[in-house]
Length: 423
Ligand code: GLU
Image 1 (cartoon, rainbow, N blue to C red):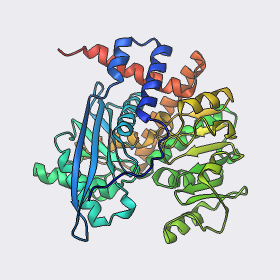
Image 2: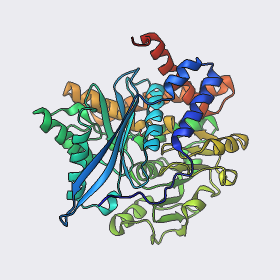
Image 3: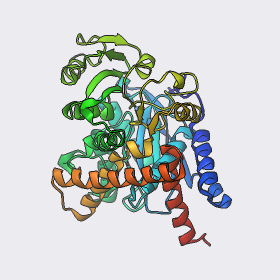
Image 4: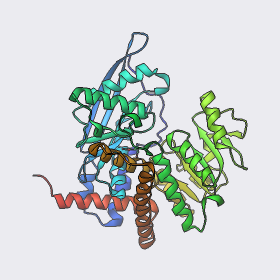
């Protein structure tokens, strides 16, 4: 049985978008054309076939990828996505964005990404484990603590990282903590890693609201997606005093202008498996959520949800990109013209990879930090990146996206020039 991908959520080729963004950065920041050419390609892309035994005794054959975009600043870093719509070009785009993200944060990594075309919701835990262990084995020569370090992304979690860590370690004959991040705490994970992407988003949003003379208690916020990022973000923003007017997951959205009880909605999802049917709010669609009357909209699900067809209907003044690539370049222009402040993915969701860096360092040193130390260091790094991006945005009169990508690309370009072209 070969697993086929159904019709995709991707309206445009994400790798074309990523390259288009790179070209715009090259022009705006005067980066050497040859360097832009080098950076517009991925260093290495591996495609593997993953046969895995299903519980009924049959064999399913999945397709998997691991792409390294660039390693000029350090080993490549990036998550692994399990989703039916995964394509090689999506993984390449996500790998390129990881390169800019790590550079913008000033952490010593390049960019990578992995993906398996599958629907993890339809696989049993044992099927997922067998598939993950075979995928890990197929890419075992690509990954490693000094080479390429995976982490969770859409459709994967700490348990999947535990299987990757175990498979790699069994093959090496000893535990290799640095091979993967986002591991469970019990086996070398970092305190604060699971919450880190949302916590980084919270710090970035606080900084951005302050620039507008606002604070969380003044803000009405709609969040699309209730996975790792969206669910923690909703909780943290509630604790900070914000009003969460809308939430959603793949089953649909919830809207309550007076504010949703996030803990109760999460409990409902815990019991029923979906946000749909929660009594404390009215049902809305995922599309309607993006167009609500509110201060901040935070797409925390998949790519290209804000596009040329709906960007002019976004009423929020701030877009916080909790997911990677949620806004197309066409939508970016429309939002920019309308004066909407877009806090781009490489800035807004970088908290995850920053604490992944801390987990990698702790694993290599076998010395583990307290949670408040992790959070304080996270805040320091993302706030510095916000201030640098804001300063570039103001000084050059460019969008926050162009400023953030520009800083990231410039650092990678400088590293490449300094190292020189081999041979
Ligand atoms: N998948 C996350 C991202 O897109 C985390 C990557 C990592 O921690 O390496 O940033």
